[in-house]
Length: 216
Image 1 (cartoon, rainbow, N blue to C red):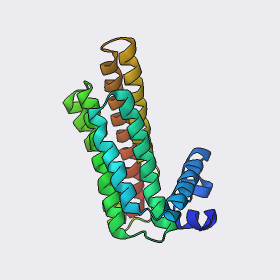
Image 2: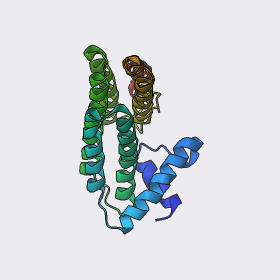
Image 3: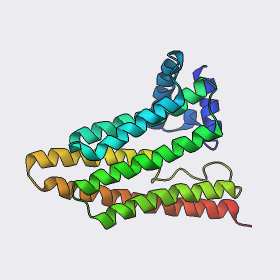
């Protein structure tokens, strides 16, 4: 499958969002996933195996040092891009696979936030972060079921943002803890606050787009 064919198929699975016209960062990320997915496809690695591997990586995040956790989140984020790429290039993209992938994403985010909690972030703040990210995905899913075409809008609270905040928070928290005991807690609290703030802004953006798309 060529890049052009892959981009068209990827766009059809992501609400018409065309990676060829996206920002250089997003376009580069999708293209990297295409190359990795093509390689795994040739090696006969299935998309479900990649999804499971990503979920296992996430499951380990709360139980390792923060710096190692940052690396696991980064690898899990790449696996999340790869499983869809493998499904597209091998012609094995299914609605059931989409559901499994979405469930794995939510469980992975639960593990990342659990790592922040174990590093000292208040429980109520962690629950707020989980609630706002899950609500973001729920609203989009219900809007799509209600007739909204495409994604509605690409918000600042999307999954790539959560991956970035988790990686940065764990990485900086790990470094801060090495510099001075106790600073790691301050950093992870700040990371979860950023997660919640961007999630709320993104939710507002999404609700506005949903209202415009579905208003009678």
